[in-house]
Image (cartoon, rainbow, N blue to C red; front, side, top):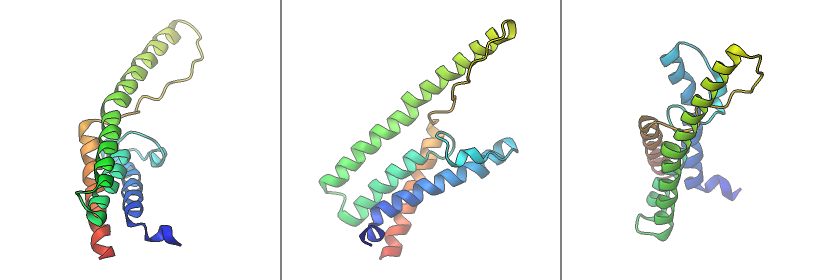
Length: 147
């Protein structure tokens, strides 16, 4: 099966998966509560979106060369994803927090039954850094192992 030899894809998927898995114990360390929903949830430390994109970009550079158009495209796409994770989605999360607070205030005086919006949509810069490092490390290990 040719896809099993696509080391760029494998590096990205391993980085993404490991980032998602690491969210659970890191959140436990922070809150002393297990939250298994983080295995499939966006947001949190480390950023799995960033780990995926940086893992793919770094692996493209390692396997195909850093002077290729494909590497340039992957870096540009990574920049868009990382910008979205740290800015747009983070702001959407802040808006959700504010809306949820307004709903709680209204509900205290009125019997409102409103669904809560998801508040953790984006990433802090530290969470993105965690995903960035995860992507680099996993792509590097994949490249060494593929030898």
